[in-house]
Length: 88
Image (cartoon, one colour):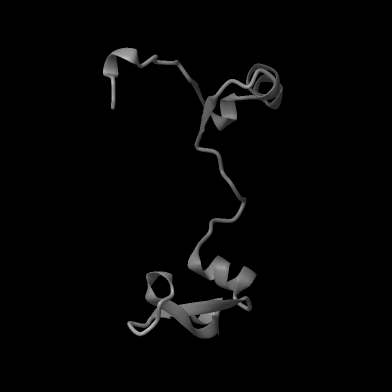
């Protein structure tokens, strides 16, 4: 059961990615295994738009499933067809 009286609050530092050096991150957080919140970190140089995904992995084939009431498979899902991501 949830016991709100036995909760310990821990302060977690918060940085905008532009204000956190690699040296500070490694020495103060990674090596010491301390949590840190890094905000606004651009994960890639190119935004993941639908056109970008289509360009990068449009030729990858995705296996589709569908519901079938007559199967004993988990969730009632069975293999359907395959299609290229750019067609999805």
